[in-house]
Image (cartoon, rainbow over all chains, first blue to last red; front, side):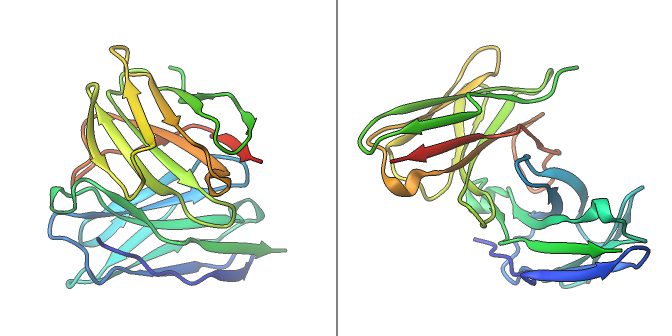
Length: 112
Length: 116
């Protein structure tokens, strides 16, 4: 299975850019990389998904190197409301029986 | 368009009992996945249902079972409850099966199960 590794926690200040890196050395050829955000007592919420190179949407960017063994979620100009747990997710490919693997998550604390 | 809903919100059971958790998918979605999230940990994939059939399973024992109904709502059943089954159980719906290029999953708020 494509196991993921993320930093346990990160601290930042409002207005700064935050980069969270996820390692996934055993990612399968057909797997995509997806990031989710989770607030306490809520289900995770989709942030962004990519396969290779760079993907950008209205809330984040995702950078994936050519070997796809890692990925970096970039949050521009964070605010206090971005304080949450961020999960890196790979999997879903038939090679691994459609199983999905969440990382342990990164606790992001944004301070004023 | 209604989101994913789960019931009940909270549940307390004793060891050895059986429990059924329910999930209503977001309108238009035909795939449901269930996850177990222990306190302080990431969600762990239990299984997925696509058009009423199991379509992928995580490392959970057979006492964890599920159903998906024709309206794509779903149930998670856990028999012979153990203390370690205490967790937040999350349901997520999506359109289409989970594959390398899988579609966004929409999560419900979860059911908090406590086993005493």
